[in-house]
Image 1 (cartoon, helix red, strand yellow):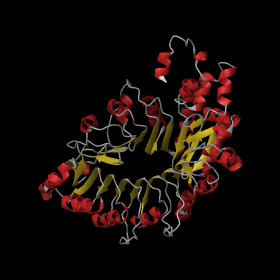
Image 2: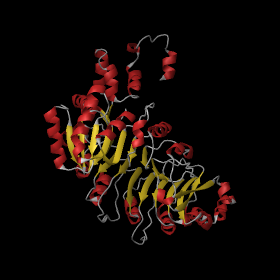
Image 3: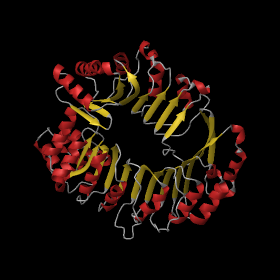
Image 4: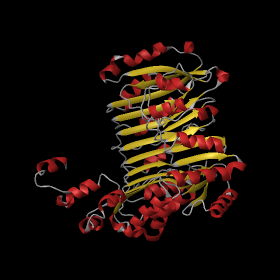
Length: 546
């Protein structure tokens, strides 16, 4: 498109002169509602562009005020459902609206190809999947839930029965009900990419694979099995070339898994902890030579506990520099770090993007962590003699962008906290487990982009006032409130939002119940603190959305 505009620079003098095709290319870079807000009211021609059957709508319903969410939904409702190509929602309080659309007029979404729904209440997942089978072009599905689904067997049967689904990405939690799925003899699923962060029992993996004969990419996590690993009947998966496994499986079971299902692999990424046998280079060489002859990329991340540095023979790692490894250009590094009273060795390959490591904990200021993680926890425990100064933390970290930062520390001041947030600009969720009075006395000279704050301990009005001043861009605040402070805190937050145009859209009150809902509703109505709001209990948290 840029090349086209360059060629026609002399003939195109204003936006109106661009062709519909060029304008649609521009709209594709924006969310549909944002594009409509920017261009829809310019003139009659632009209005027609948004109702033309050639334009595919992408509806993004992220964390926003209730009024903004309603405006986006109104646009969706007023448009032609048959032109909607994608719906993405990360708002657990607004997902009811999306579900009501599907239940009331599902047949209208004939062109819907991509659906992303995060934080759905557990009891709504199965009815949703039951209805999705009627969508003729639903190629991509991403789901996560709140609470626990009671029937994981029906859950997966419904997923595998979606007629044209090719991409499935889920983070679903269910009760500890035993899987009763049996091997599928006549699979019909067209899934080519299956990503799950649901911690399956390793014994269910062979059964799951029998449902997906078209599988090309598999990324899955497993939990330690309490049963002996069963022997699977091998399945020929000729298209499966990419496998990422995040697990705690022992190496013997892993060898069995690889020999039964993964002969065509070209890319193998493993993130594993606990079993030191994963550092046995000779066993790896035998496994790869015998069962993975087409392997091109090998990415290993392994963490093992060692009682003390002196008890680990580092020389055994030199086997990974033998000709077999160097000829494949697979090179590895290792580092050690301390957590509480134990030492750990972290072993990783140099080709790794290391994006799969989900959670790293730092306890010792002598530790340097040079991996990527989506979650980072900073822990201070004087009982283990590892008092970590938060001011030193940024020098310990040599990686990009955790999305979630948890601070379990007894002391930290505002300057240090802001410096840490500024050093990690991608942090979206900040979890503070202990409040520190040192935060109160420091001037706020920083502006952070943190959108969600979760506070684990009980909190009072003074604490909330300080945190709001530190994090002015908060959109969501979840906390445990001391009982007699609830009214004063809610009153302060809503008045602050009204007077200073603060962006705080969602307030979550943890460890709550239906009585908290009634208490909040009475306060809001009595003092008229908000006119357009929703109060809802999800699991054990009451949410106020305004």
